[in-house]
Image (cartoon, rainbow, N blue to C red):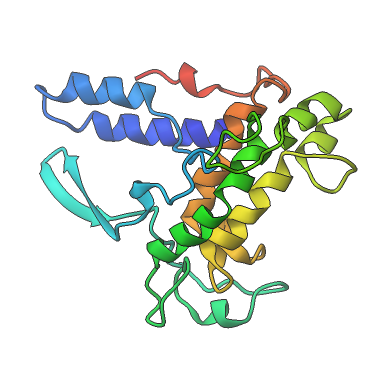
Length: 227
């Protein structure tokens, strides 16, 4: 995560320096405070608006331009091959998310799927008093709370391979629902290619930051990069 933050901020700083003098201070300051996007799917079960359009309008150094939305889909530079790759997904030249017959991402279908399981997602990540969420009877404790209090090792806390609750468990449903059964996100062999994985996995970074071991001196923290 730190390395990705470094790369993101460094790229943003390089772009910021290209703006005209009257805009330069604002964009350099914005690049300094830029952080990786994340989707709090436990609080907001619908797809983030930023991942839905195929193109977005941005203020470039030379004025407004329309660019391909990098969060909408990933276009394969070369077709993945080897163990685990195959099936219908192997015939597509890009990632798909609840795709229509014409391989267009169906954001409404993703939202409907996620919304049906919204109470389960939220109760598994945060602690909610009984009966206060959409009229549903919810538990007073959450999977996340149990994970923090009962896990004896970081591996037990982070992954479902061990006994007891883990941070991985609540997020598994997002793979199935946000991408649908015919989407890239649902197949774990392919899911890392879907840009949505980037934002929904980053939701756990603020949660895990208090318990992840501190970086060594050999790691350059993202906020140490100068403008």
